[in-house]
Image (cartoon, rainbow, N blue to C red; front, side):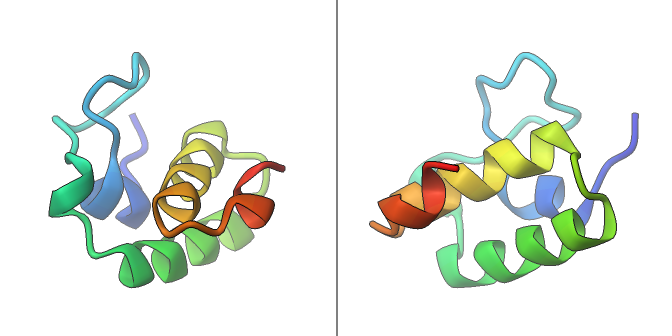
Length: 69
C-alpha cells in the first residue's frame, strides 16, 4: 500500500483501510497534520484515506466547516 506522510503522523487506528497502526487524537500534532495532509492531498487529489484523515484532524481542531467537505 502507498503510505503517505499524512498516514505517518495522523492515521486513524480504527480505519479499515489503514496502512499503519494509527494514532489517537492526543498523539497528533494537529497543526502539523493539517499542513501535511493538505500537501499530500494536493499531490494526490482524490486520495480517499488522506481526505478522511484531513477531515479528522480539521474536526479535532474545531474547524468543522472545513472538515465537512
